[in-house]
Amino acid sequence: MSIAPPEELLKILRHTPALAQAYLVGGCVRDALAGHPNHDFDIEVFGVSYEQLVADLSRWGRTDLVGRSFGVVKLTTASGEMYDFSIPRRDSKVAPGHKGFEVVFDPAITPQEAAARRDFTINALMFDPRRGEVLDFFGGQEDWRQRCLRHTSEAFVEDPLRVLRGMQFAARFDLIIAPETAALCRRIKAGYCELAVERVREEWFKWAAKSTVPSRGLQLLVATGWVEHFPEVQALIGTPQDPEWHPEGDVFVHTSHCLDALVKLPAWKSATEELRIILSMAVLAHDFAKPQTTHEAMRDGRMRIVSPGHEEAGGPLAESFLNRINAPNAIRERVIPLVMNHLAHMQTESDRAVRRLAKRLEPATIEELIVVITADQFGRPPRPQEISDGVRALQARAGELKVESSAPQPILMGRHLLELGMRPGRELGVLLAAAFEAQLEGKFFDLPQGLRWLAAEPGLTLPDEVRQRLAS
Image 1 (cartoon, rainbow, N blue to C red):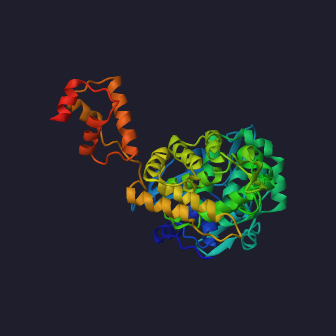
Image 2 (image 1 turned 90 degrees about the horizontal axis):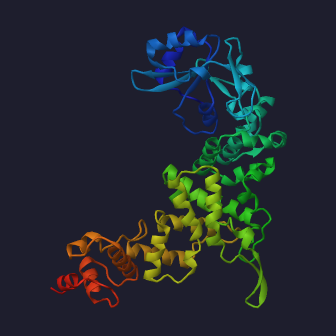
Image 3 (image 1 turned 45 degrees about the horizontal axis):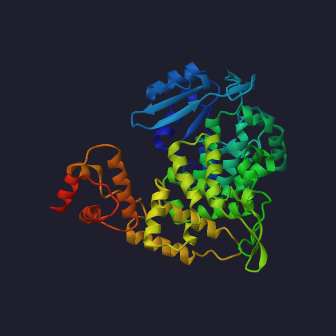
């Protein structure tokens, strides 16, 4: 493993007396182990007081003390780079909740004692930048080689959030939780109620945006019993599917395969963090309603397992899940229509149907829906990962109609009717709604055609003045 801190940071470390016992810690060391570049360097400093650390760092730039209660000094150098320096602390659980800790700073704490308070062995690694040596007190490097997620010490139980951190770490780095760590997580399952919903959401969103094998995170929830806190996910376990269409197993297994397929798609890899979250949450939730809609019915002369209406029924369940983790409206309003329309490719796609689909999805898009559907189709091993003809037809038609990345917008606007002599009021709104429906039906495609439709459409109540202007 090799870590190459910036020359500026190395200079600070080598020429600052207070940093004689300073080590790179946390994510930058773990990510170097994974072979991933990390430009965020956290430094833990031993053998000095907070005041001495601040004084010695001040000669290198501006020091920000906003992390004082956590023993953190943020240094901004003349070049504009920022580094976090911290002194070790002893945390004692004195009350429920994530704020229920008594924090004591102690310059006498050893690196091994400090590492023991970290959550997992792969996060307890330290790196001595002066000697180029890794400090590994708890076997983190071997756990990494074995793809094992293991708690560092019994201090793990003091913060239940660590279980959800484990969920996203397992998914990001393709790890399997150690049996003894899973047992420890089950012991603190009731601690979920102590967690602030914002912290729960943050871990789910990291899972959604950063996973390489999302199913590992879901498997961890099952192994620890924490899946009980997410009933929509738990209900998928054991819900059967028709073996001809879903030879992979139950709905939980299918959803896991879909998520693993999703993160391999080029569209997901190139997406923004927000869009990754939206797509991952939509795929996670796309079959949430199968447990309540699945039954056996006669199809094609034999009994089959079917789940009619599960796509539409999934909308409220997706909303319930997202509400419980306090997902922002910008996420919810795009995930829910993707869930409710993930079988749209199975209907005959006329031009009017495609335009209406784009409008139903808004503010999500047909482009995003195609990604969700593709992940759904790819999540059925050993069936081949092939995009169906229905998906290709939908994609092509949406492109021809120019609605793949946005919904149709009204051509005939209120200002056009006002210019013709209409007055503001209910009648104006009725006419605009009727005009937009006609546009979606394909009765006109530009403003002149829209005005001709307005003049000729029977059943519309127009003031005489407006009809005269339309006729002129």
